[in-house]
Amino acid sequence: MSTAPLPPAHPVWDVSLRKTLRQGQSSFLVDVAFRSQARRVVLFGPSGAGKTQTLRMIAGIAAPDQARIAVAGRVLCDTGNGNGIRIKPQERHLAYMFQDYALFPHLTVRQNVAFALRRGLLNPGKDVASDTVDRWISTFGLHAIAQHYPHQISGGQRQRTALARALVSEPAALLLDEPFAALDKGLRQRLRDELKALQTELRLPMLVITHDDDDVGSLAEEVICLEAGRVVRHHHDPLDFLDTQSQGRLPHVAGRAGSA
Ligand SMILES: Nc1ncnc2c1ncn2[C@@H]1O[C@H](COP(=O)(O)OP(=O)(O)OP(=O)(O)O)[C@@H](O)[C@H]1O
Image 1 (tube, rainbow, N blue to C red):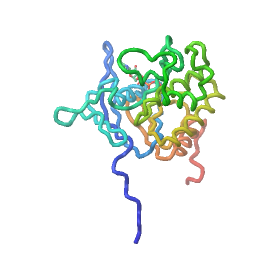
Image 2: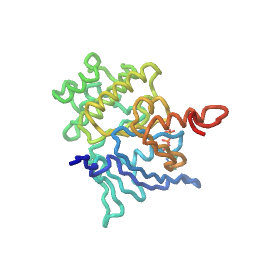
Image 3: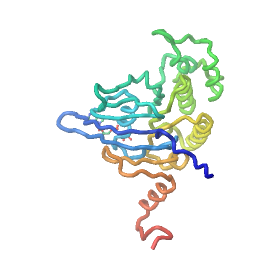
């Protein structure tokens, strides 16, 4: 008897959202929908395509006009369901890493990492005891700089601190906005490899925004291309995406190799 695996009950990413952004006389419509079973998905598109706005609505820090958003089987927002579901950002259990990392400048590396575990309104103390914080400080090799402030550390160390801070609360998924944009080329590739290895170990769903092909090549299982606020292509194979990109860069495209 054949034992074909059952299809998974829920897609990892089930996103359908709409929002009109208005500024003065101009407006911009974000109308994005995609479903994916992949754990490492890249949202790719030129500047102004609507990538950050999409991520902000998934995270719950921007409110869509209409949406149904479910991540890893949990419905986070459903405006079409009776009174509607809009889970608060802090209750979505998603970690969001901003383009500029948004570390707290007046807190040390250790305090920044511990921030998500604070109770009440007080910032964590400099020597806050926590096995979880220790684990992430150690995973990202931050021991030597744990008592430094963000302005005293390098770009790569800032990025690692931001990732440690994102992971310390054991999120259900990781949302990363241009995680490597602020780094130089060599460091970028090293941190991509580290991030991929970590994601593979944790099996944590990860949605990454980028307009860098190399991020796609290193990280993506699937690629969703956004232009002018909409999904224009969904590549289930990142090699297809890279192929399309390289064809687009050729001065004269005579047809794909192997095609008639
Ligand atoms: N509050 C707002 N009011 C009106 N338009 C806005 C507002 N915020 C963003 N936009 C517009 O929405 C569009 C999408 O912006 P978004 O930041 O999502 O782009 P992006 O794809 O992330 O670009 P980048 O790669 O440069 O970060 C842009 O054209 C931007 O000007």
